[in-house]
Image (cartoon, rainbow, N blue to C red; front, top):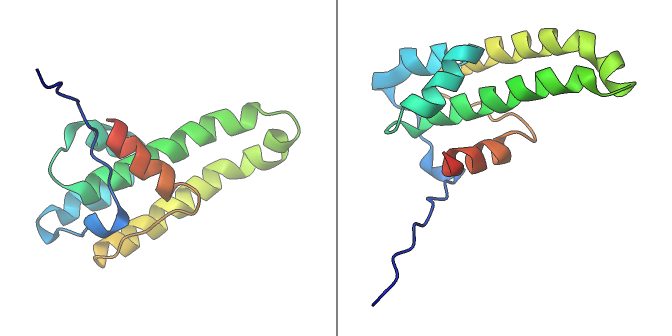
Length: 116
């Protein structure tokens, strides 16, 4: 008998397209807790899930970074400011129908989407 393997879907940036119908949901997904929820709840709109994955990774990094000695102590106070600026830029770009890829995080976000 043939074995059935559960293959995970591997996403690429080419597949993630802006959907005008979910524009409001995509904009609001830049808020940390909403983005994390959308990552798990939204199954059809890859754009919204991608934003949620980026926000989830950024949120985890912001919790872990201040715990790292020396580097975290120096960068830690700026993490909240960086997250706020990222959220605003992401919301503005999303409202214009553009995808905002965070450097170093976008590849991890694609892998996270595939894992969930």
